[in-house]
Amino acid sequence: MGTTPYRSIEGDARTGLLIVCDHAENTIPPAYDRLGLKEQDLHRHIAYDLGAAAVAERLAQALGAPAVLSRYSRLLIDPNRGLDDPTLVMQISDGLVVPGNAGLDAEALQSRIENYYQPYHQAIERAVDSAVSLGKPPVIVSVHSFAQAWKGVGRPWAVGVLWDKDPRLAIPLLEALRALPGIEVGDNVPYSGQLKGDTLYRHGTGRGLAHALIELRQDLILGPEGQAEWATRLAQVLRKVLDAAGGALHAIALHGSFTDETRRARGETGRTERSAMDEKTKIEIEAAAFRRLLKHLRGRTDVQNIDLMELAGFCRNCLADWCREAAAEKGLPLSKDEARELVYGMTYEGWKAKYQAEAPAKPRRQSR
Ligand SMILES: [Zn+2]
Image 1 (cartoon, rainbow, N blue to C red):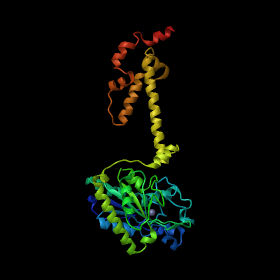
Image 2: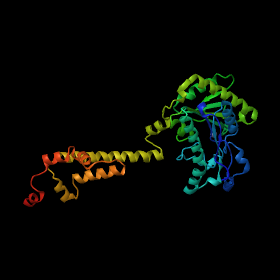
Image 3: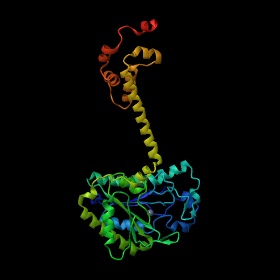
């Protein structure tokens, strides 16, 4: 890989703004042999967002804000998708089969993730971190462009604002854009901004940073004139919105995502989320059963430790030792007495004095 998979534009993190551009370029490293596509296919919207990179760059410059742009085609791997999204690597895009993506094995996918996907997101993370460390959690603005028609249906909007649940930037941004004369503005069109695992879900929703995705109709920004016009317009609008909002846009506030709620309502969770949730639930169930075991043993004071030991090979003190070992594995020192108190619900000495049979267990059993 000759070049880094992302491009950072220097800017002042104290502006509290970060511009990102997921689909900035149509580059496919030579080793991938254009994924088996014709050269002209790489100049279509399926390979990247035409005009978006230039607008993002000019917008960052106009605002003095840093920007992070991806440097490879979304056909290689789409950075604006969650890792468990089936469209992460498109096999067919807008009716076009992508031969180089057919039957991709786990190793090949992993290599694309490591070489192209992760470095881009790590660069965004670093940009966010540096603004946060300066006390100015950044507002994230993602710049995209959309095709003027999709499957034969025209799209009238010049610009769309895509967002999920955090209204802090999206609502005033929509209002400010709608105040501009002669510009048709779309709210969550041509797509919904509620996409689990996408760039803004990860860096905006996930970290509680105000954010919005701006979709520009690509025919408006194909040339330098349109690109400059829109960059200037967006810079003015954003500056206005930021000034009016004061500090609220730079507060860290977790608004959550509709995608989580819809999935929960449907009884679904994401692949990784489900396994994480299952593990947590499993641990909770195991813990509940253990607590019940302790409760049971505390109630059955007639059962002597020695009887337990002889019949089952363990006793209350063994349970205490197991707790102690489990705590030690977590780096939490637990004394023998503390561990025993956890099991007995009182001090071991106290329990012995109260409940331990005077006579040794053996003769008692022999007498049975
Ligand atoms: Zn895009």
